[in-house]
Image (cartoon, rainbow, N blue to C red; front, side, top):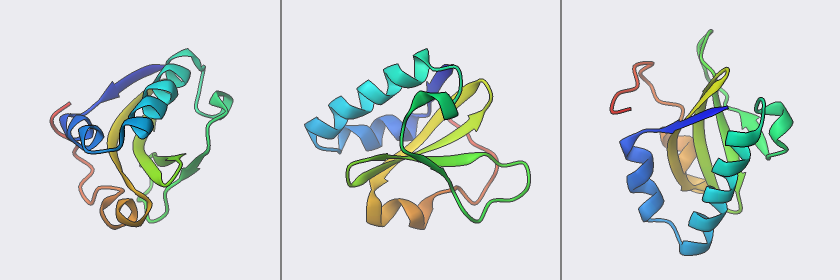
Length: 100
């Protein structure tokens, strides 16, 4: 899989604890070697409240969540936030993702 990230994800990642950052880098390497999200073995779930054609998922990392958009075979990492915060701002309201 091709793994990309937006600028906002990098900023979010810098504000997470160091142990979570290490786990995120491990997850990224798993995603890069996996054929698809299903075969990655990660704890992921499709986000609710999406319009038809949107493919937003979250990957669980302890008490943190990575918000991703999966358009096979590409995965774009959009946000990483604490469990209580991610569901308030993800999936994005606009389908236009900028700053790739």
